[in-house]
Amino acid sequence: MNTIKVSVKDRLATITLNRGKSNALNRELLTELDEMLKNIAADENVGGVILTGTAPFFSAGLDLVELYDYNEEEAKSFWYLFLSFTANLVAFKKPMVAAISGHSPAGGCVMALACDYRVMAEGPYIIGLNEVPVGIIVPNSIFQLYSFWIGKAEATRSLLTGKLYSPEEALKVGLVDDVVKNESLLTAAERKIKKFMELETNTWSQSKLNIREELIAAVNTDQSATLEKMLAQWWSPATRHILKTIIASLQRKS
Image (cartoon, rainbow, N blue to C red; front, side):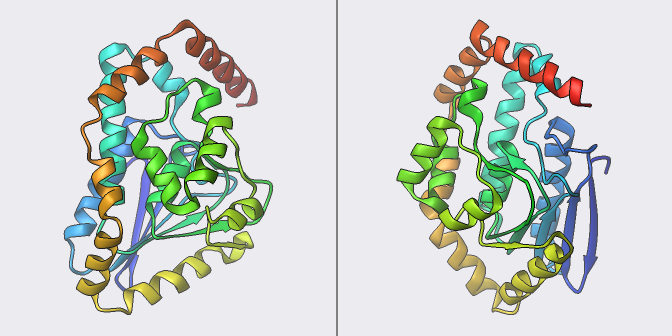
């Protein structure tokens, strides 16, 4: 595994995103994480997962630098991969807690939203879905995932403005469930997931899937028409200009 690290102790798997400083999501990371979670789902010796990163990032979201250079076929296959990965995360049957170790915008936030509980580190970090200002059309499935936790009104307001929340603001609206000091992050995540894991496995898992029934249906709906609109906007001069400006800024910072 080139982009993630995995350790297992007392039936608890801890997956640490490990791709550069910011854990930007590219094809390799999504593929490795998706395969690992499928293996864990089928492994009776693992009862739950903590998903984390390394401060000051959880994940900066999609790797726009890599995506910008994709041709049309590569871009289309990547977006299908990302939406399929999201659907698998949402339907993951075992307990999964996000230990959000820092910044978590866009795709990073999507991963955290798919988990059952989110603990975020204190600090000058941001979390939320900021795709619209970047020029990316947000599919309904992602909106449904966002609103599942924070309600449709808050999700609509924040999504259409690209609002990014501080940890304290995220806690207030229900985007995260707990905010702790960074040194206590994994301890708090372990404490929560072990409470889930103490419960009867099938009862807990089936209840989770029942609660998420409409959400699972939404993320598994055929999204071909939505993707056509997303990709048309992705290649538009306006979005390419925005992306080019963002990438230039990222490269200056690195």
